Length: 396
Image (cartoon, rainbow, N blue to C red; front, side):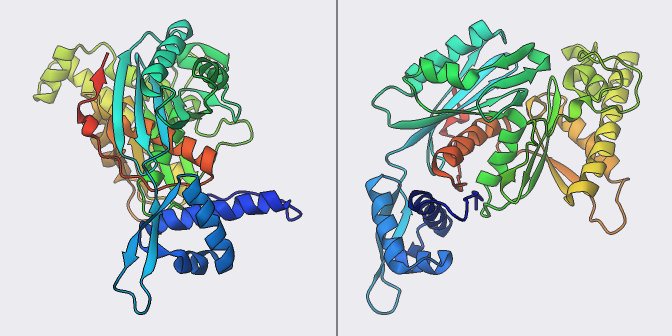
């Protein structure tokens, strides 16, 4: 459950808000199997309080009665479930060379998805996002909020403090997009954190712990501890791409030795053309193929070193890998190289370390953006099982 902080001397309104969150989370976890009495038992709140809150949640279009439980002895109980027929959320992912957006219900049903190719310049990205909002969130669409997964260091205020690989600095994406879409609430989250949060949203336990490795033009990490994203006081948690790995190459950030110089996708690919990649995948053994194989192996070893340190710090044994690497032709080979190297680094007392691709692949960041918007608006982490009828998203 999302943990919210309330002062012990909180007002009546703040205590009611906390109780609303607790009841809504219990109903979401119950998945249509809880009646009011079950919610009271699970939350420890008085039955009268639960009934009052449930009535309010029904009026707000967040909860609905899901029929009666005829199997229960005595008077049939009225079961409760999330109401996905009213509120909509839009998830947006700003990725390298494209913007993805999807309209989703509270339970994760995907109603429409659009992908637009765009140059990463801000004066192009923001208008494209605004156009997508006009299409996906018209005034009659019941869209409650927008979640945006963006690269770089993102603050609570929706400002991208810095995105080195995009050349962005102090960009108020949240405010700018909100102004362009009728004042809708816009909640911005770092893309790696969004993918990590998508794994929580797909889990039966909202207190899930996830350690995610983002591999793309840059490298980052997203860490969710007991259902809560850890970002650090300066929002810099997960900036692992610029950790010194002891190499002698200069990074675009100006430092020497950064992980990105040997393990980001452009560094792994190097000068290999698509033809070289195909030859290497087919078992080619010419100079270009051997060089590509060596870069993949080196990246796998460096990632394994990093993940073994994270395992010892966070006490996790499974890592999720997300980002552009998931759909890149070299992605499976990179993942194999990481797992091969991890197999040699089993620490005493630990289970073997493994890495896997994010559950929803290319859609993970969009789902995480929606999960973030839901959490910011409603205070809960809702379990979502997106059905991607958008296995064929519209591409503009």
